[in-house]
Each structure stands twice: as structure tokens, then as C-alpha cells.
Length: 143
Image 1 (cartoon, rainbow, N blue to C red):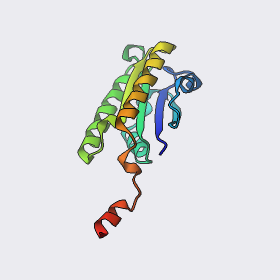
Image 2: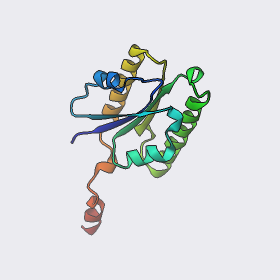
Image 3: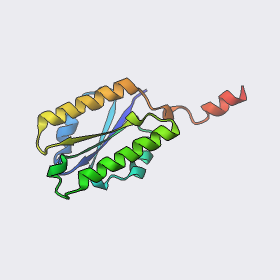
Image 4: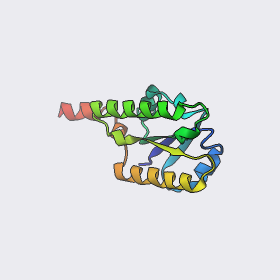
């Protein structure tokens, strides 16, 4: 079963999404990089809907807080990430299925480290439990 990762990337922190894709070498894993004007534009409902697609891991990459051109963007994104993780825990889905990294724009070595972290997290978590067949639970209940 192939897995999928979606990265919401601040256009200031990751001005060239192709550079991020070039660092990715996870074989069977599909990577989607979705540019955002600021990481603060990523809402809790977006993260949850993306996970429910189902996607195996969702990540947000933003600027270091002191470098955010919108002053509080990275700070807001951190609060939204915390809220998302709390909600995932409440519904019984691993909070580790969402992650966030802060980077200084243009720092290629930091991007490489982030890609490595994302890949490692995906390997440790495996496929999302939401990938099960939609009627698998109904079949188990019928037997």
C-alpha cells in the first residue's frame, strides 16, 4: 500500500517547493507540497480534512517566529497545530500524524533535516488507520 504525505509550506520559508520535492526520496510515498502565503493561513479544519482524505501524515513548514513577515503568523500556526493534536488525541488518532517545523528561509540543510524527520515519522507510524476499507467494520460486526 502506498502512503501519502501533504506538506503545507509557507512561501517565505520554502520559496521553491521543487527544492523540497528534490530532497524527498521515500520511494513508494507520494509527496504533495501545497504552498501557502504564510503558515498562519493553515486552519485546523484543513489539517483534519487532509488527514481524513485519508493522508498518512500532514506537515506544516513555516518561518522561524522572529522572521515571520506577518509578525505573528508562525505563532498562530503553532497554536492551531496544538489544537489539532489535542483533537486527534480525543478521537483516537495519533497526534503524531501532524507535525510542524520552523525554518530560516533559504536554509537547505534545515530543509533536508525536516525531510528526514518527516520520512522517519512516516516510517514509524505506518499507514493511517483511516485507510481501512470503509465497510471493514460493518463486515466484522456482521460475523
